[in-house]
Length: 111
Image (cartoon, rainbow, N blue to C red; front, top):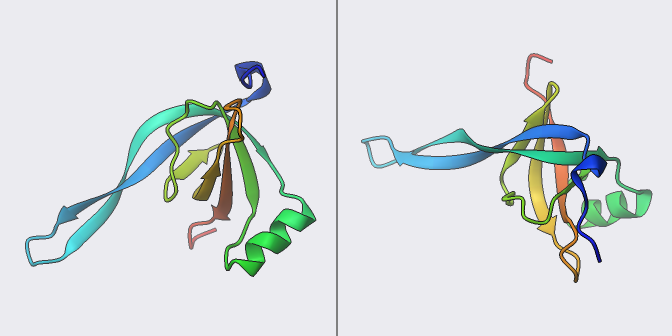
């Protein structure tokens, strides 16, 4: 199969990854650092996908398709166009034609 093409991925999303540093008092401070910008297609999950996610204790708000070589991992945030998606799982099909990220859309407390 042919990998998903960039023409099928209309959005540019920034990949933000958590990094931990010591706080000097025995604890850790977690900050997010931008590590990449990727092409993506964001779509709504089906009712079956939402139900399955809910049964496993997760909230599935969006399915993000990316190129199979995209470095996107569980725990990353995808940001763009005023939206933020937290990645809770990534899946490659049996043939690496795309990377699928199952995400929860997050909002800041001010919005």
